[in-house]
Structures are given as C-alpha cells and as structure tokens.
Amino acid sequence: MSTPGDSIGALFSPHLIEEGVLSTLQRWLPLYLDAVKDQHGVELPEIASWGLVDEEPDRWPEQAYPALIVIAERTQSVENYAEGWYRATWPFQVVVYIQHPQRVWARKIAQLYGAVIRGAILQRKSLSDGGRDAEWTGEQLPFEAEQSRTLAASFNNFTIEQDEVVNWQAGPKDELPPNEPPGEGPEVKETAVEVEPLEAQ
Image (cartoon, rainbow, N blue to C red; front, side):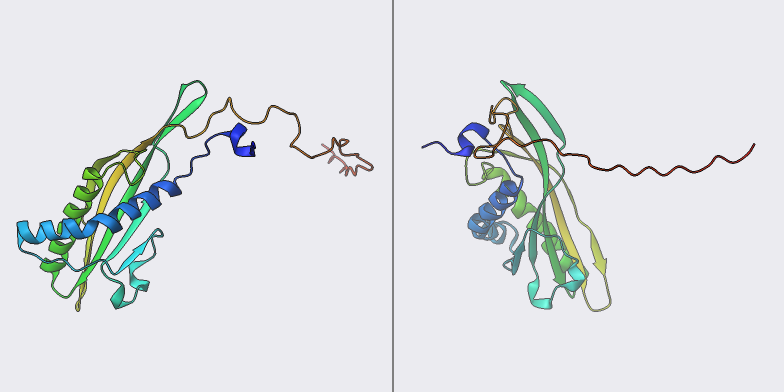
C-alpha cells in the first residue's frame, strides 16, 4: 500500500543530526572518559545534564554541571548534485560547560572534555545510523572567572555533509492534493479604493 511519503521522498531535518550526535555521545562517552583518566590522570566528572537547546548558563542550578549541548546551525553549502537530489553541509557545535571554584581546574576540565568530544565524534563519525560522517573544524575555550567560581566551556565545531536532503523531481504529479475537490477561484465582490486630492502646486 502506497503512502504520501512514497512519492514525496526524503525530507531531511537537521534535528536528526542533533539527536544522532547526542545519542552517540551518551553511549560512548564513558569509554573516552576512562581513556582521559589513563592518559592524563584526571577523572572527569560525568555529564549532569544533556540538551539540544543553548540556554543561558547562569540560569542553570549548581547540580546541572557539567552540561553538554548539541546545536545544529544554518547550512554552509547546498548542491543539486544528481537526478534532482540536493546535498547540504550542516555545521553543528558540541558545547560542554564546566563550573569549578579554581580557574585553572575549570579550564583544564573543559579542555579535557573538548578532547573527549573530538575523539568520540570523529572515531564514531557515522553518528549511530551510518549515514552521515562528521568533520572537525575547530574549538573555542571561553571562560568567565568570578570570585566564587569559574565557568569554563569547550565549543567543538563540526560539519556534516548530508546527501538526499530533498529531491525536487519527486512529489505528487497531480494538480490537487488527494481527496480535495476542485474549487472555484476566490470571488471578488467589492473593492474599496481611497483617493486623496493632490495638493495644489
């Protein structure tokens, strides 16, 4: 039995990138945290909150740190590459926020988490479904020092190239959606026109 999706084809949404990245990290992060402990002698705190929305860190409670957020951004490139198919490149960020009373340790933990994120994403780059490969494009390490704490972060930037985003040649070939009777065009019954007199020159 055919469905509307059979004729319309793929309708890719970048939420699949965000959810794929989050799922990959939730599954594989413990292994990479063990690797950091072996290599650098630091036992990193486990992620306390996971999300897909970049909220203001100042609004989080103390127990929310470390916090990991995945954010897909606007496309970098779009290409119509074969038989009506479009491919696109989506950048995305994986952000880890760290809070610690000592500035050096806040930044160190953020930097180590940045290394963990890079390893987990690039070495598991198919992102759970085997359909998309991630490339790393850089990292930022901002921090904000206050009297009682330092808030540090690792912003890891990646891109994903996605084939078969949409096919412009697909879709229904009928003039009207199914089960919709042909209708008459809108009837214009009255038109109001306001005219203002010209000022004398």
